[in-house]
Length: 403
Image 1 (cartoon, rainbow, N blue to C red):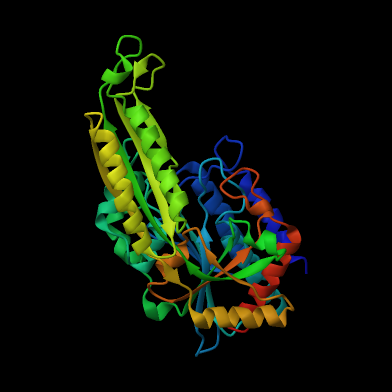
Image 2: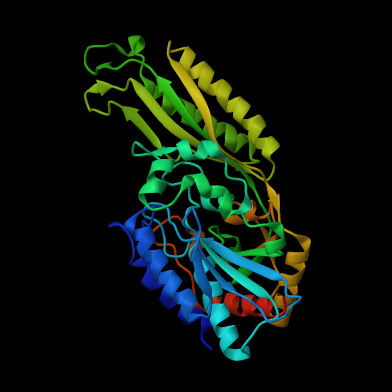
């Protein structure tokens, strides 16, 4: 069976469901989200899964084994994308298991384990800032304050209501520990390691920690032609100096990665000195203590840069995800599947955050990475090879069958 081709065909079909953009833009609580969810639900039903949609919009497909002692394996990833992203980030981990289950049931008729596949509705944090919101609901780690986050002037609470969800019933989304034994997420690597090693797939050992911050600087707007350089309170140049110095610091320390992914100035006119600047900080490392220590140094840079200009600032932490080790038992079982399929065993950490981090709160957790071409992700040119999908599909079918 050509598993890889079927997976790729479905991913290409889903990529057409997008806001107008060079790549894929499929955001939570939009018509594109609803349209994609309906297509995925139909594929789940065709695969032999019963389906339901939980209180935050996650789509769940379920197969119940006739085995009275059956354990429960949950597979899944996210269906949302970043703005102008690629075809494979997240959604691969939804479609690949669906195809695998369909093929397994077609070949064997039944399985010895219960299987659930979750298409998480919102992981990226693109709109409301915090990542993994809907897997937090399933894992029971969702906090009430998250409902007050805003996107384009609308609170998450209100946007959920408009889409037909009840934010007061998020607790009902929680999966009990006795309902799940193992969670497994399949994802493109989003980096260059597998490509460098010329390997199709790898077993993830751990997911690194990630802290995010929002920084606001208040200066004083003014005419661009009348105020001498030394007399300005230019929030824009202060922001630029902070970004430069912080980046140099991260390069010197070498233990983490630092990104200023969203920057803006107000009023944003060609002939007006910026009176306000706002930017985000995304900082990641294998240990959260490294992030805390580094952020203290960055805060000192911000304080010194802003105060010498006679301006003010505030910093808000918007997201905190601790480092998460993958379960040794899941890694061992994946390794056995690699060996049975004659695939070289290779292990690597994850630099990106994933829904699996939240699900580790309620189950043994593991991840399988699939090589992406040139290590490129969060980009319209993001790509995978059909033969790699075929290898990954065979490994996952072996893993499920022997679970």
